[in-house]
Image (cartoon, rainbow, N blue to C red; front, side, top):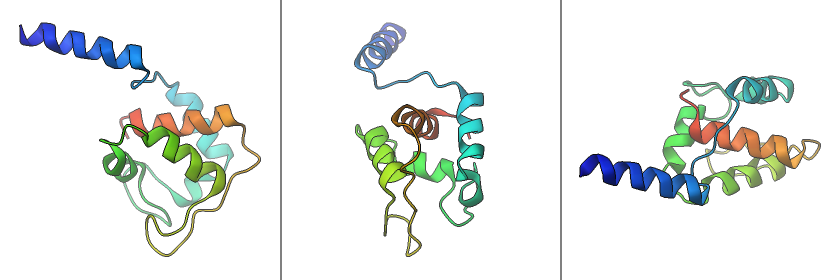
Length: 108
């Protein structure tokens, strides 16, 4: 019964769009090409937080991807200390969403 409940709940998450398949190699390439890895790494704080810390902070936030999209596109101040994250207005909406989904779903 427990397995059935887990499978059903997974199906609900997939149907609701809460779980997103992300091409990890493409996301890493986007991060490299857009300077993300100058300030962030998978597991350790550089200038900005580690991706694993971001995923942990937003893990229970149903709007996590949307919030990360906003931070990537428009920048942010004060979420992770006094150093602001610069905006990335030249990135496409699709690329920004891919990065946000990757941060939340990848095994960093």
